[in-house]
Length: 221
Image 1 (tube, rainbow, N blue to C red):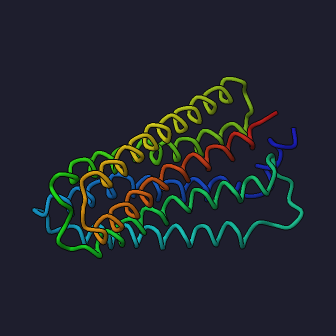
Image 2 (tube, rainbow, N blue to C red):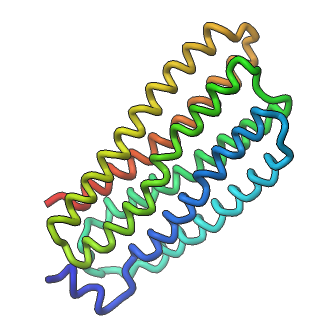
């Protein structure tokens, strides 16, 4: 009853959390397009795409600050506040990792060697599904906490499992790609650049899974 009544008296923090998740979702395809643009060396939009990601990250930061700064003290919530803010932090870390990956990629304007370029594009694409699941996850969670039906809990659990699987697949790809870098790249500076890039891209899916883990904690009985 408490979880339903709270929606009568104040604006749910999940509304702004969903707005924040939508910013993350917008960045998903933009990110993979930017990586492909840089790798292919035949696209003039990399800087523009990077700027758009930075703009979305700034807008998401404003939403995050609004959530943190306007949560009434002593307000009753249907979830643990610590878990809620941990979820917000991990979801925000997804955007930070996307932005950092593109900034790091920009430090090497000559692009990536052809032998690894296609692998890098596939790897960037592999982290996108986990990012794209966060917005529907938050939307479904908002509905669940408003009306906690069993069917919605099961849908949430299914989305959480999907994100975990996407992260697992991206993690496997990350290990294979790092192995290929050590095997193929002889220049130590380029090897360092690529390994850090791969690790930063991999952290995007890691943070998405961390966020889904916090959502699992919030819906736990």
